[in-house]
Length: 308
Image 1 (tube, rainbow, N blue to C red):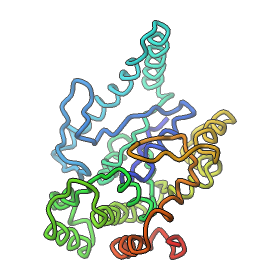
Image 2: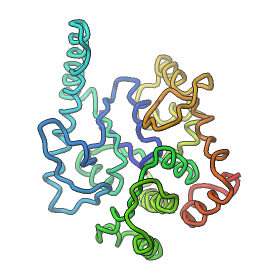
Image 3: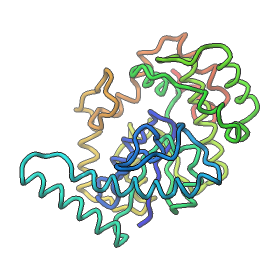
C-alpha cells in the first residue's frame, strides 16, 4: 500500500478529501508535516516558513522529520478518553495502525496544503500517490474571509528559487502587491485572490508535468460526492465498499447543516450547498475583483459560467 499526499491551496478541501479517503481504514491520517507551526511530538520543526519549496540541503532533515511526524500521529491517537475502556480502545487503534504500517497493509495519508510547493519532492522521497485539490477562486476567497485569515504573499517572495518557477507576470504581481501595503494582520481580498493564483499556477504546472497525478475539484466532489469519491478510491487502489459509501453519504448529504462562523474544519455538512455558498455572499464587485486578479489562471480551471 502506497502512501498518499493530498495537497493544494489552503481551504481547498484537503482535510475533507483526506478524511474521506481514510474511511476504508487502509490509510491513516497524518496532519500537515510541512506546517512549521505545529511540530511533531518531542521534535523541532526543520522549516521556518510555510509553502516551502525545499532546497537540496534540506532534504535529509525534512525526510527524517516526516518520518517522526508519521510516528507522532500514530501515537497521538492514544491520547484522550478518561475511562479505562476509552484508553484500551485507543491503545488498540495505535497498535493496529502500527502493525499495519510496519506490515505495509496500511499507509499514511499526508494531508498538507503547506507541502504544495514540494509535492514533487514528497513523491520522490516517499513514493507517494499525489492528489491535488482545486477550488473555485470565489469559493476560496469567501472561505478565507469567513475565517478572517491573513494571506501573506511574502511567503513566496522570500523564496527566490520558488519565484523563478512562476511566470514573470505573477512574480511582478507579487512584488507589486508587497510594495503597495503593509503585511496584513487579517483578511484582505486582494491578497487571498493573489495567493489563489499562485497556488493554482503551481497546480497547473504539476498537471502538465505529471499527468499521472490526480486533480480533483472541490465543487465536483461536493455535488457528486458518491461517484466522485468512488472514482478517487478506485484510482488510488482503495476499497470502495457499501460501508464506505454509507459513511461518505453521512458526511456529505443534503440533510446536514452548513457550519459557518470561525469553525476551521467540519466534515459533516451539506457539501453541495456549501460549494455554492460564496455566490450569494460575495458582491458583484468582489467577484469582479477576484476574477480580475486570478485571471488568466482561473480560466485554466473554470469556465465563464462558473462565476454566475
